[in-house]
Image 1 (cartoon, one colour):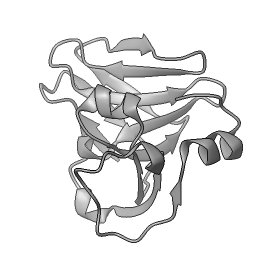
Image 2 (cartoon, one colour):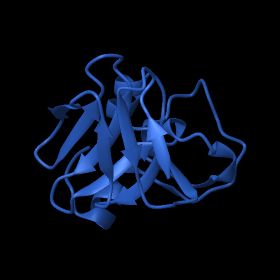
Image 3 (cartoon, one colour):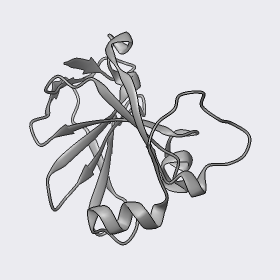
Length: 135
């Protein structure tokens, strides 16, 4: 899959994936202004283009990347596993995606709901399943 930031200075390549998970946690919502529509791409993600991406260490086990020119959110990366989670909106062929799950459902504000029927996990369930303590 190929993607780029809003200004086109950073290009992204990632393995093909069809599933999107939604994170409703307060950190993702603060970072992006709403829930993160996340594509789990694993460690095989490449970055190129004319700009050097910026990184922000958002916790002991994760960092977030963005374009320093236009501010486009490029990834959430789990440091222990080197897994990149990219926003679905980066990719041009969004019709190929299927909403597969929602996490941090207990942090979802009441002003929106999705019609899609998906498995859901609370924050506590996410930490129990994936072994992290916080977002």
